[in-house]
Image 1: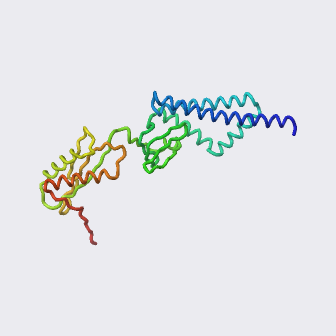
Image 2: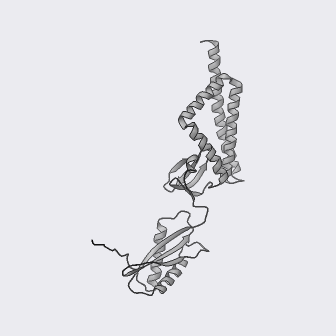
Image 3: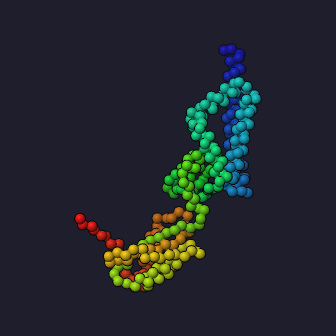
Amino acid sequence: MSPDLITFLTKILIALAIGVGGYLVAWIVGRLIKSVLVKFISATWAAFLANIVTLGIMLYAIKLILNLTGAAGTFALIVAGFGAAMTMGSDDAAKDFVSGVKLFFLKYYGIDDMVTIAGFTGYVTEITMTNTTLSTTTRDSVIIPNSQVLKHIIINHSKIPGHVVSTVIPIPGEHDREKVMQILQDGAKDFSLRMEDTTPVVTLDDLGIKTSYYKIITVVEEVVLKPSTPAKLRLEMVNALERAGVPVGEAEVVKFVK
């Protein structure tokens, strides 16, 4: 093997060693900076600044490779860059990076916010330059490319406190509708999960053939509505009516005959 080839291969190994070492240093320093900054600023900005530092270290490692290894280092970087582009798609990676910067400054959501993105609902656990990670209520970790985030409608359930919940109560036969609405209004005000400083609404939602339907709408403090909450509201409303001597019926089933 010629001395020139040995020198070339040696420089490639040096370039690879610097690249791997730079990546490890960038990852460790980024984690440390994030853990320190999160004590003084929001987790979202801590992650953003940590990503900037990580990127800076990686760029410095690339500069170091070029300075120390010359053409061999350039060759190694081209091969590594080509491999990364083939794996991730260079165009998509660039879009994800630009979208990540936009997300940090637009502040559509932050760490620990409950959001719905691209049909997935969960708590934001991590925001990087390229991806947003959600922890869903079904205990799944969903990683969404930032470019895809900006292509979809983003619902931030944590921005506005509370969640609207409603239920419909059928009352059969002839009855005092104003009395029923007052009972339901008082019962909704006493609902155990109702958010303070909110006023429930009771409406006569529909009139059936022999049944009147009353709709109760209130606000609870839950970020994401639990499946049991509407049932709990309905149960407490039924109990309030029964205490007042008002019978509760079932929804009518109307059959259409041709």
